[in-house]
Image (tube, rainbow, N blue to C red; front, side):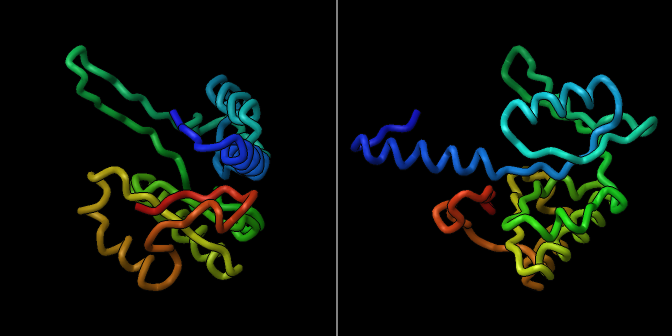
Length: 173
């Protein structure tokens, strides 16, 4: 829950949230299957621009399953499908800030897609942000993440939403 010191702060907060909601775009691929239809419907319902045409046939829509045991332990399994062919150059270079999850770089083809997207965005003068919130992705790929940061392709630090009013900004860990 967020607490505000004044009504003006509350109005400013609501205005920023509306701006962010209008400006979001999701670059993701789904298939023309039941899970893809549910996914696209729910994303649109949140006001996120999602205009990538679904794949016809194989592969099926990727998914993530999180299992929670009675004692509160979590086990997560992901079926990731991102490939370099999925990158749409006009969308990758057309967003003000590109944000991606570090764990998506686990499969080699997904890693290529992330690098390609980051290079396109960076070449267009856009910000690239990544999160390393899953510890299992940091150690095995540390050198690759550092290379993205040192090359100037990805940001290292925090991006503040106030610096990009009306744009979606992710926070880098």
